[in-house]
Length: 608
Image 1 (cartoon, one colour):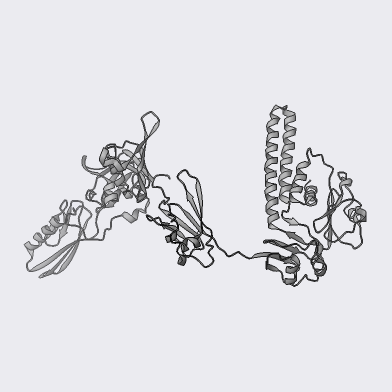
Image 2: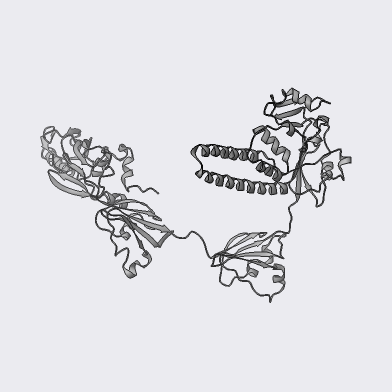
């Protein structure tokens, strides 16, 4: 956390916010001078109001009476003097003297302030008002040794901290014309941070100890850890050092805060207490009021879990306590809570701090399958143990008239998890192999090394692309009319999380890979592979004709005698390229992991 110098931010406010107000009654000690305006009201035998301004000779003019010198008198003295002059000429009257507009005075503000110079300010202004007018001391100026000079003599040393920390303005004197305010460079400083109410960098007026600095910073917080306090100190012309202190024993052994004085540039850090709570245990699971509770002396599991504290579905035969030992290992304790309730003489199990008690549920969440696409009632269906796919299809109202069964996609979460783990493990091992190959290139010549590094980079990129295209979790099944499908080899027993998507019948056949115009073409009933290859412009020069295969809409792949094969909507004709890859085994490994070699090689043919 960045520390800021204490007190300087107050001068960032608008100057007018701290300017004195002229139109207010002045105190009896206000000293009059040229430019001040007096309002004299007389009533009784004489009724009149005189508004007089003190001229540059220090006088006001009263009719009949003449000039009266008031310069240098305070307001109370001037009031008495005016009454005395009026009494010489008039009888049976009363009078009132008030101040009108106040004069301005010129003062000089110099030293380490943002805008040094001469300022015309209200005669009511004090040292503080003048400092605000000049923008305040800059970061290299002192807030604790501000000097007021008058007629070449030192009048006051003003400590702005008295005002900021205690609201004390007793030494904030009112200024007079010609006064000079001088802000010298800042003195010694010390910072304090951490668990303290007002972390900042403070100016030190004299030698102080840590306790004084803590008081200056507003005091400690409830989270302050006095056993771990540090001083970071910079030695003159040397490195920094850390001094560790334990302030909890300060009064006993005198080490701190009384025994150690702070030095210029010291940084005090008050560290926090441990936020963790150790005298608690946790209740989780089928409990009416789970949460953390205090470990009271002698508290037992029987007291913690009475029958009325549990939910109806709580599984009582195996309540689990995870206990953390002092050696940082864990122990798992299994409890038959039902037997513990029934046997009052059973050995008590005492709760220890940080125990984690879990009561599991007897309720088993319903398993489900999601049907999407061309079903009359698609959605998520709850399934019974041992229920087959055909049963759920019937519950969904069977297929719609436009359902394309050959293009159905069935996925299973358990298969997806296994394939994902195997794929991640394979990618990790292959990456490690590529890294080892890269290290071995250090012994190659620069030219050969550059070629080999390029090949490794290409293989790494191909690995990432192909692995990202593999669809995990798919099981190839062959759907049919429900009467034929029910009880067939493809009528699988369902598991939780299974999905079945049945699309509408597509109108295209894809031709992918090394053909002159890879694209999707409108399906023509009765047309063979050669027809679609011709539509794609025929084989390109890079085509590997021997590896040509047909990827069916259901995810299965066919090779050999392809000219005799029927082409269905949604099928894809894959023409692999003739490319030289040093090692094809890693691609086949991915395909094997995913259980869909055709799909993987289809992705490869598109990418390459």
